Amino acid sequence: MESKKNHEAGSINDSGEREARIDSLPNEQREVSRESSRFADLCSYFLQKNVDVPLEILDELSRIGRLELPQRAVRMKALNEELMRYLSGLGLDSDTLQ
Image 1 (cartoon, rainbow, N blue to C red):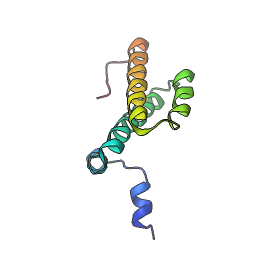
Image 2: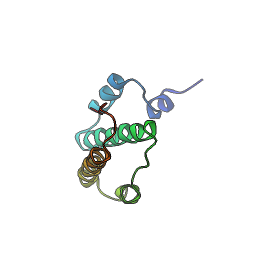
Image 3: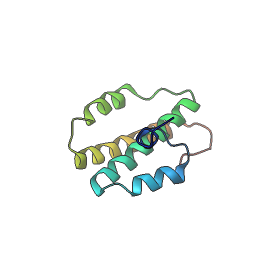
C-alpha cells in the first residue's frame, strides 16, 4: 500500500492537482516549484517532438540545485525562457506549449 507521503512526492499527471499542490506551498517554494513544473512540461514536449534539450541548459540545470530558493526560481524561469526561444528557433509545427 502506498503511503500518503510517497503519493505526495510522486509525479502528478493532472495539471489541476499539480497546481493545487504548488499553490499550497510556502511562497519561496511555490515559485521554484512552478518554474520546475514548467521546465518538466517543456522537457516532455521536447521528448514528444524527439528534440534534445541543449547541453548548456542541462549543464546549468545541474548547478541550480546549489542556489538558494529565490535565486533558483529566477534561474529556472530564465532556463524556461531559453528553452522557449530555442523551440521558437526550431520552427516546429504549430502546436504550442502554454
